Image (cartoon, rainbow, N blue to C red):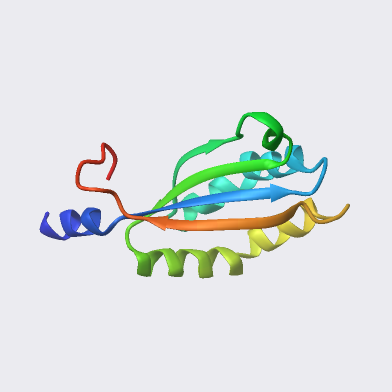
Length: 118
C-alpha cells in the first residue's frame, strides 16, 4: 500500500488548451470523442475533464485536464502516445482535409495541500 500512496502523492495534472483553425473545433472534438480519449486511457493518461470556454473562444478552443502518476510517467505517456500506430492513423485521417490544431498550450500542475482533488 505504501507504494500506491507514494504514487498518488506524486500525481501531476496537465492542463492543455488547444486552439483550432477556423471551423475545425467540431473535427477536434470528434477526434477526442471517437479516438483520442481511448488512446489516452491505453497509455495510462487519466482524463479529468474536457471543456469549451464561453464567449468568442467557444468557436475554436478545447481545454482539458489529464492526470499522470508522476512527471516521469507523463513524459513516458506522451512519448508512447505520439508513437502509437493507432494515433498516427487517427491523426492523419482526421487531417486529410487540412490541419485541425493551430496551437497547443500545456501546463503541468501539482495539487496544493488543500486541494479537493489529488
